[in-house]
Amino acid sequence: MYRIQLLNKISALGLELLPHDDYEYASEIVSPDAILVRSQKMHDLELPGSLKAIARAGAGVNNIPVEKCSERGIVVFNTPGANANAVKEMTLMGLFISSRKVYRGITWAKGLAGQGGDVGKLVEKGKEQFTGPEIKGKKLGVVGLGAIGVMVANDAEALGMQVAGYDPYLSVDSAWGLSRTVRKAISLDELLAGSDFISLHMPLNADTRGKINREKFRLMRKGIRILNFARGELVNDDDLIEAINEGIVEMYVTDFPNEKLLAIDNIIPVPHLGASTPESEDNCATMAVNQLRDYLEKGNIKNSVNFPECILPSSGQMRITIANRNVPNIIGQFTTILADEKINIADMLNRSRDDYAYNIIDIDSPIDDSVIARLKSVNGVVLVRVI
Image 1 (cartoon, one colour):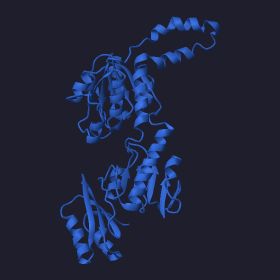
Image 2 (image 1 turned 45 degrees about the vertical axis):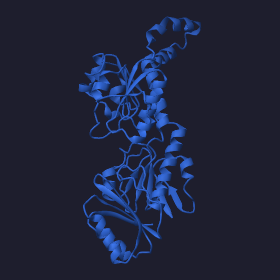
Image 3 (image 1 turned 90 degrees about the horizontal axis):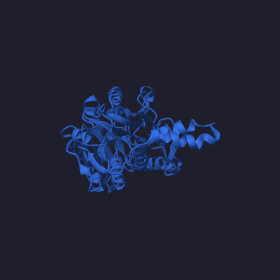
Image 4 (image 1 turned 60 degrees about the vertical axis):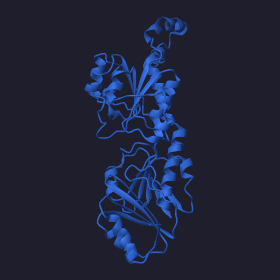
């Protein structure tokens, strides 16, 4: 029986994929094997010794202590692409409201309540103050061409925009999905300097935090409109406000409002609605649960943020999985221990990622606790499981 702790409300469509005979799940679970989470911050939570995996029903994992998990061999999963369409649609909405002043116009129009029969005349008289340009023919720069960025670029081009993209880490899958007429920018600076609109789709990390700052604003055309449905911390708020006051930034649409931004007229604050659709929540939950099951039941890893992808069809009587620090000669120690015990390896897969590696070893006979103890004692090993 696998025990799953739910730290947030998880879509029933995903939870239905957990067989009742093999899984128990609830918000209060003693000694969980895995955790399903959405947005709850976990950095101050004590991670139980039984924990083997955490799956976030969403893409970002800033609320999870990933480094601490890696040190203990806890695999952290996310669900890239599951909410991509929802965020893409919100970004397209951002394109329109950043340009056509609909947001301001609606707020103004609601203020006409109580004017009775004069409302129509007042609307016609006041609408000129909300005039804004069309997006067709304008230049959109997409920063980050992952699942969401590719969809935004393709759909914006279909709306008649001239689209360029920049991503130094463009994956093969993303490249295949990107329209071939989307122009590849030589550099981020070149993209920022040549765009009428900028849409941010970068992950948040040490290199991207505050990436859009005073230096970058100085490169942009006056009247630039910026959309941020990725992470609020990608933009330096103080430098943004300065750029707005200087007339560089015409409008900033963000899904991450804070006290400092709410007082600025040229900022449209969206209350973190990018992935807030029932379809997105269902997709994320389904993907997260399937990844957890594949790991707990078979030891396979897909879409982990701290361990490498490692998938091996089962071919032996038992399966050993080992998470370890990525150090030399460690695989030879595993095989030597098994050979000493006359245990035949039916198949084996080793993958590494940065400081950590993961191994799947299928064997043709059962092993006892003493062999497991020897494997755990190898210097650099952080977790051993037998499935």
